[in-house]
Amino acid sequence: MELEKLFLKRQSTREYCEKPVSDDELREICRLAVLAPSAVNSQPYKLYAVNGEKAREFSKFVQVLGGNKWAAACPSFIVIEEGKPGIVERAGQRFLKTEFVPIDIGILSAYIVLAAENMGLQTCIIGLRDEKAIAAFLGAKENTKYPLVIAVGYAPEGYPVREKKRNPLDETFTLVK
Ligand SMILES: Cc1cc2nc3c(=O)[nH]c(=O)nc-3n(C[C@H](O)[C@H](O)[C@H](O)COP(=O)(O)O)c2cc1C
Image 1 (spheres, rainbow, N blue to C red):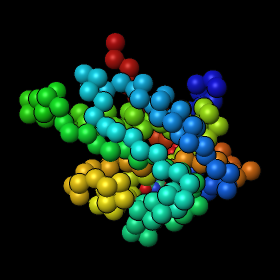
Image 2: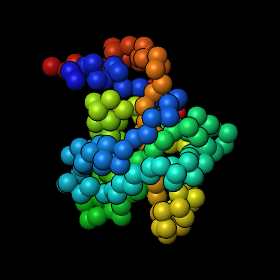
Image 3: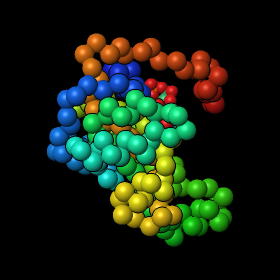
């Protein structure tokens, strides 16, 4: 898909039809997404694709504080697990006062949603989640971090592509020359 069309079509989708997402589609999204850049190529993350019956169970962990109720009907999720900071991240934190891991994870999630949209799938990045419950579900240590979850599925027929609401470019962009 042409890049601008892809950017305009990608949106946070909060309604999904029953059409399932295949395991291969989820794997392909992740295969493409890990082409994302990261600080010193540290790739400080792991990806889990939750599909089928397990996704029904998983959806409870993103329906917290009364939010994300739409997730109950989402057929699959990609979960980003935060990796341990490597030497670069630790140096970044110490000397540059910069946390590179969340930056890398943000870039990765952008790649995930755009790769999915390009394959005809819709997504929603989810920050509202119960990390402890996700860790227990995945059999990980209680303090493992899951900064973002991505809902993946097919929007129902006729689900509108909303106009993008963004700040005027002049508020965000300055040309320096
Ligand atoms: C880090 C992050 C966390 C988000 N968390 C949620 C969430 O928990 N639930 C939700 O419905 N949308 C969530 N969103 C989606 C944003 O609300 C959405 O991207 C924004 O309003 C712009 O709309 P668009 O994605 O349709 O262009 C999140 C987005 C980001 C980047």
